[in-house]
Length: 422
Image 1 (tube, rainbow, N blue to C red):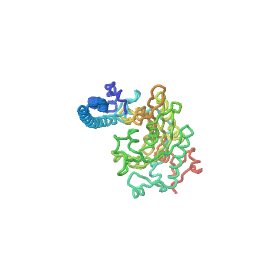
Image 2 (cartoon, rainbow, N blue to C red; image 1 turned 135 degrees about the vertical axis):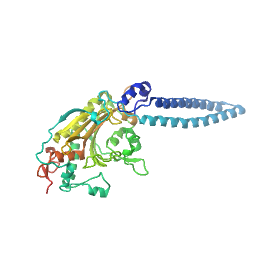
Image 3 (cartoon, rainbow, N blue to C red; image 1 turned 60 degrees about the vertical axis):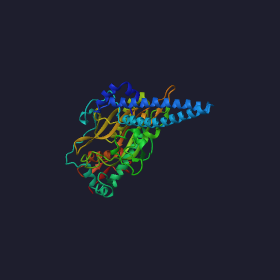
Image 4 (tube, rainbow, N blue to C red; image 1 turned 120 degrees about the vertical axis):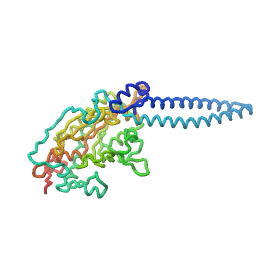
């Protein structure tokens, strides 16, 4: 959520900033809602003051006739006060709903552009494999030994779910353990969190109210399956005051993620690239505002470290204004190479939200004079299914086997190569 005082005093600058996203900040509507709220608040305070004065006068009045009249006046003021408080609550709710619909302000260094075609490549790393044989995609490789099975998942649930077996299930588990262990060594505290969250938690991180159609909601209850561990982990400090000496606070969590993928019909339907349920290792940081840019770079480097250690070719890009997420001020994407598609695909998004989320969640930093809002940062470190798919495609051999990256051999019980053609 944006600072309402910033909206009041710098509406033109904010309008220009949000236009880079393709978002139209309706200044007139904001001013009308804010003015209505202000008038009702002034009227409420005036009636409250009048009610207090009449209460004292009634208590001190000795003359019965005068006292009866003052009681009558006090009753009228009390009725008016109740009515105007209802109007004020409605006005505050309308204003808050409007504010919740405003995206975050973009950082100054975010390149302008309308879509992902305008994202800026920062660098590419790793060697793209050159195969001398006809390659398979990750689904075909997994199906060689029935390690990846979509028919069973449709029977159990519906499309866009997957059942992993044998070597595929083991590799999936090995990746999650390796990622967690690596990030813990890098200073993150491992944390286990609920997979169901309430409405307030999703409002805090920015998924609600705008993106409700992308969520899976529990019937007849205000609970939702998490779209990412960012939601429960970030809300740990909702309505809390942090000490500066504790910062940065860094967490790592491995959770399943659940997304309805509304509006993505026909997109990435083959394989395990876009699923309703997938696992991810998430990195979340609570930092001092002065350190947030540096901490975003550190977090992104930690995510990159996994790709480097797995020897997967990838690139780092900065998202343009039109492709930057609703709650993010700036986002770096890491994209891994998929030989079967001859292109890079997103495997991690690392974002600085500045005080956008902490203002919603009321996460503050204790200061000697006035407490300030902290900044929040998060990113995937990494998406496990996509990492598994990238390993299968980039490390495949002509004989139908897959070479296990060195850092995963111990996690795979010493197995260095998966012979899937048997």
